[in-house]
Length: 170
Image (cartoon, one colour):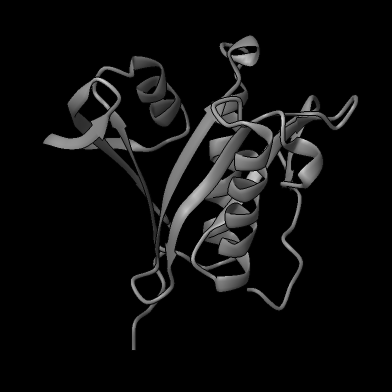
């Protein structure tokens, strides 16, 4: 994977997924500029280390980034990956997140040959739950007090999608 340039992925006629660049430092809004540069550098390194992949979702009209879609982890041995995503507040509710989530799932199954893609979100994040379901990731479990957030421990939902075409083992 790291021998190849990280690809752009098609989302829809309004947006696409592309690798992050230092021109995007204003997009990760919870960081100052120096922190954002470091974070973008770490996101880029996951591709080189073959442990993850991060994309900026960008508008086709001006290529400006307005969110992040990523495989937090990719495990080639188990054939699985964990998705994470966020969209800037001004672009939420426009259908970008389910479409981009679907795009990276399809890429994982068809290009990487992965078997399973999963994601976790706080049970309090109902919008993220809707995104997961719309993208075909079924709710599998509720994990008690699984993740720490700014306001304390949250239960999380585990959603997953499995590649429909079975790959013979052996």
